[in-house]
Length: 252
Image (cartoon, rainbow, N blue to C red; front, side, top):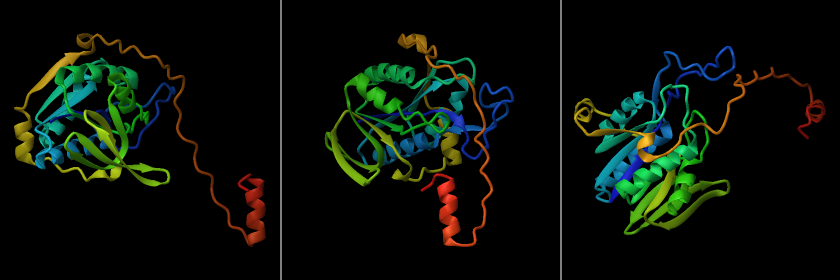
């Protein structure tokens, strides 16, 4: 079974994000970028499926700027077999919207014919949590979201999902789309030998035009601002005073 893993280049999760002075977006100048953490978990799960003999090829895909090559090389160093980069933006400030990403991925799926698409549940830069679901709708495939455990059993995928009430286990037919959650696994570090090997692994470069997909944004960001600072706490002298303060704040 072939596994397709979409990965996105985002601001590293350890970096404190700064908003531009004019409020037009986030400052990306000289900022460390890395693979979206949820996508990294998806790559790790694909590798584990291959190690268990349940997958025979892993294809990593990234859609965005040319610099996303670095992200794909990381996926290759972790254990992916080959990669596809779809250059769909000239500037790092342009974020490709989920529907456009899903349309491009649908075209790639038609070409590659994978049995499974493993993706992160969301990207940490825009928190859309939509691409996997949109891809499922475009392909007419089954889907399982927020996966914390994945097992492939023949032509079925058994997925444990994290839901508001706890955990839910479902069985879906393959081919399928699975979006993964944080508790699915702990991604491995790429070893130096594997980093060197990754430089020789195939990385095909395409454009959005190659797939006939228009990536023109449908949404306009009107303003970006920092979250408001948390107000200082206060000390109360009694339970009655606490209740009164909560009432004043509209908390009760």
